[in-house]
Image 1 (cartoon, rainbow, N blue to C red):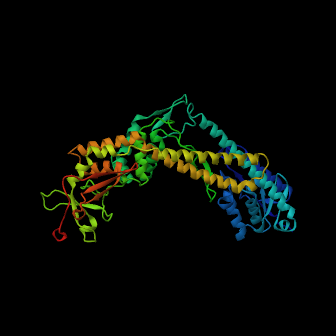
Image 2 (image 1 turned 90 degrees about the horizontal axis):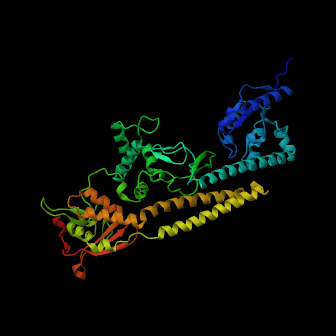
Image 3 (image 1 turned 120 degrees about the vertical axis):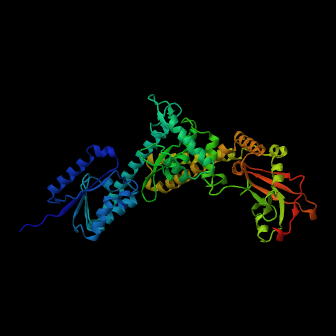
Length: 519
């Protein structure tokens, strides 16, 4: 009578494509076959493979072949008593030791006998129950595997940090935005002017208030070729392009990190490197663009209707805070501003001010002279965040050195995780303040104010153009109608986007009450 041999399965994992091209897979399969032959096992043809999957964060235990194998064992599709052959414990897990032990425990509780070939250990549920020392063996092996992964990660990070330190004289990689290419000397990038013109067009249309979907549709309708392999422009493509700091010549270093779900993803690593790429737009335009994309400035919201009131979304009632709307009585009547709440009888005093008086006040040289021209507050904030960020980097480096000197990674793990989270948050804050600094430099503010002044003096500028320039400089204009009963003349407060506030009288023409029933 032939007694069927126990079934064995091999689990193979490697995390890089280079290992796939080498002998990593063949070596692991051959070793599993030798063990099966020596111990009277039938090696199943179903080899469970996790190609390009790291075990450092336990991703292979949450998804992929290892998770599939465990599920089949739990469901009974793999018979209890079957063998799982792995080259070493670190093929199953390089994550923190506690989770590594948990992975092995789950496999054994599902009825599998786990064999690690490098040290000849055989783990079963019964052995784990009877021999506490077996847990110690697994735990110590897991500590070694986890610390090895940490050391590898540090070496890679240190190598890239050294390369970033040479970024002024040497380009880190040939990978670059689609509108650039690297010279053969690897010392500089060159602008592909044909593509750069398309990029500038996209940026300009976004600054003028066009939505990303509309921009993509227009490019497709005109047959403009994409930069990559795709045949069509999409909203997501436009959005990614508009967010790229490379537009203004900045390089954002990245690193690969693992999320809570174990998925490896790119995330920013450190501050922007200025002057790394040749810019295709100015830093000022880039700052305006990012402010609009972040929703901080109204001119970049998609315009779905024609603007007829240059003060739309800007003018507010000084009595109740509601928006002010433009009205005109008859075809020949001059437009006036009135509180929107008062207009519908919602409680505010119905007082109107001629729009032309607002323009006269905005053109007043005293107002432009009084306008702030930027401040150093953002720079002070940036320097404080930068100092804090550098301190967090030192702390993380000290923790890494402690592990190198022999302190267990499992002991310092929580501190390392907290330091990494803190550093990530500080990097994000630093980048946000950098963008604000670009928009708040005295040079940028003066340019925007000069452009606004020119538009206000231009009698032919349309309402949408005036509105856009106002929004680039002003967050709100608070209109205070005259109050004859209190002997107060009409005035307005201009709140500047770059900080500060200026007040000016609305001279010459007094606002006067209007009978709401005659509206």
